[in-house]
Length: 459
Image (cartoon, rainbow, N blue to C red; front, top):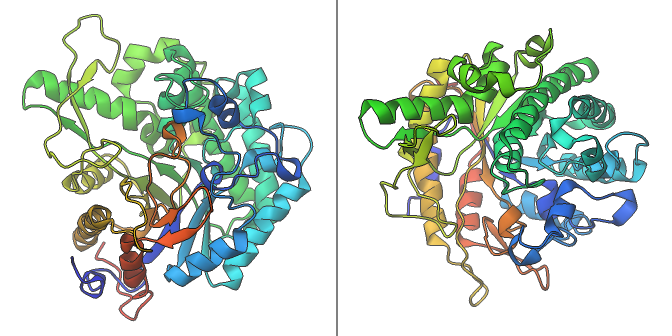
């Protein structure tokens, strides 16, 4: 095990270490204080969608344990907390009346962070769309982008004076492809046309959100969090390399392209453009606004080969075998070099601002034994990936911070509560929190910052 003090010497003194969560995954209190259902509340209640029909009604009971959980963050010694705001608490029907009690909760959260000296990194949308908006089509409807714009204004007018940064969306790949094409996340659609509509209207909502954040709070840095995929071809064959490029366009380019270049990728448009909703005049200008920062969520590489079926739909790829036989308990390949090559590739293709690793971590399901959680494989994962981040800084990439996923075990979406990503173990019966071995190690690393050598990496 590497000494955290030794690893700390590889980071600039103003590098930001934080922890991350999301509203639906930890808050619970799903019917409290005026909150109405989200698409995830409905999805959890549909048989066969979420493991064990688990739901977010209680989760980690963070809504009722806010102060204790903020004390936990402070005691871990991290400098920043990345959290998301639940739209169904703020505007319960997505449009219409504003719920002051929902805003009051986030007032308490932000004030609590400030009182404890913790920087606040808020995400406006982490997948909990107000269920009422599904009556209009949810993300497949253009009107939802404008509903998001109003929600953004409501939140920023209330909280922005105490936010250190804001992101519009978390992982649009998930709320677009995983939710509307693969059917694994809410609302569980399996339809390319629906997914293409959700893709464009999500991108549009991001752009409208950026405009609104800048209008209300020009001094708050605004960004976007993307789970960019490190796409690796199964072989050096021309067919597999072409497949990897198609996969890159489909999984990364449809978000990075409009946001950072003002265009959708050409091969993607040629293959699927006629099935997209109308891209109205001005849409791409709205989407393509300079960001102050962007967040990268990385866990595992994507390995692809060409789909031999001649009628396969774009991107016409199939999954390729893992190279490393080490996997986490959720079945994901552990392969830290892909994080380095991914960042290199993205900065080669796009003009990107400063980067924060906004999520990185590993699923291991060890329990508490004699008051301790020995999750050495998770600790090893953190060491490997943080070492890659240090290498990226040394190579001149503008990596400014790192948020561990996650602060605590929580509702892992379609996997329910059986998969654990936390630095802190949660006993869901008693809600007792136990800091794991990895959490203690990460705390020791974070305690080294901020420190004196505030030299920026060479640009």
